[in-house]
Length: 434
Image 1 (cartoon, rainbow, N blue to C red):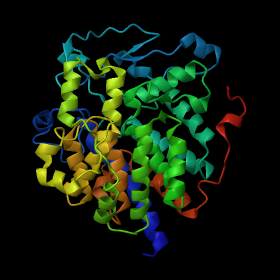
Image 2: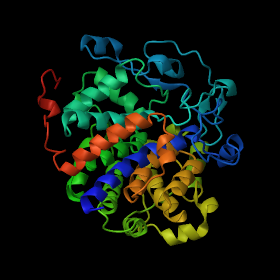
Image 3: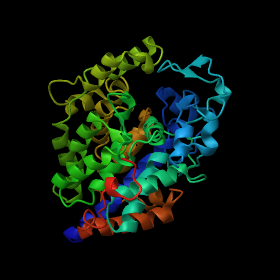
């Protein structure tokens, strides 16, 4: 295998890693109490599984999505991104009928009674992918269709996917999507609808890294890859911590794809630039419970939890010596934020000896935001692999379609033309509201 063939294969394997990691983690997404994973899945998840009902800790029911419907109609902008899943949300156009009189034990958030505590991915089947993974496919298909990346074309496809009934089977519509479409319905320019992390702390989550990391693969070097990733990031996530994570993960992914280092060497070198959050995982959960939900923590205090980091880089050897029971959730939080999740990705990979499948399964069984933490981990782990198990790939529900989409994207990526073909600035397109 020559260098170009290896690079193409590793681009494909990075993308397979994304979709495999997502689907493996989906059934236990947002299980914070690891004992619940052990109980519900016979000692832990070992392969693709369907989500169970009820989810013991879910607080999706009652999340809000309240666009200005009349304003959206006056602008001829579609507003419904929930469709058949609207029953789970408090909206501006329907009455919400599910009561939330209990409190979830880990975050302290209000939750519905157990029989109405619907799983975040209620209705998905074993091998299915979540909405964030499908939005990565929206980007991949947009690139394949245009022969390269065009932000305006992606945004059109993104809006169409989210607002067309029966496209999305996944009930869980993350806060970045709900706030994006609220801004869109209010008349914000399509390229400037993203919420800021300073206004909503959940914008700084792992999900913001997924598509930018995919897009960076079209570049021919990490210098350009970081630029492309950051440009795409701000379309949906205006976040300081997402940008910091991309600055670490994009060069690491390129080093592996180009065969410059083995997986352990590349991860270890990158870990020297990662700083852990000053507040440890268990202490963060304690703050959530003390305030009866993270939404009740004062903004300045929550900002400090995100932005105050250790002075020195993470001590990977020390963490691995401590072991998973002492580190996962306790030392490093399993929450959605990058300042917690990025160190966890490095810990998981090293703890499992940089074995692709074992690393992804430990991420699954760590719980928390394992879906969105798993996709960047899967991209990086896959980037260091020349072969990925056929059974893992074929276990995905959309295997055949994914194989075609991934192959076409990899062809464009190695051609070197993926960032110069079909350019059109979204702000200059006909009909754009400025």
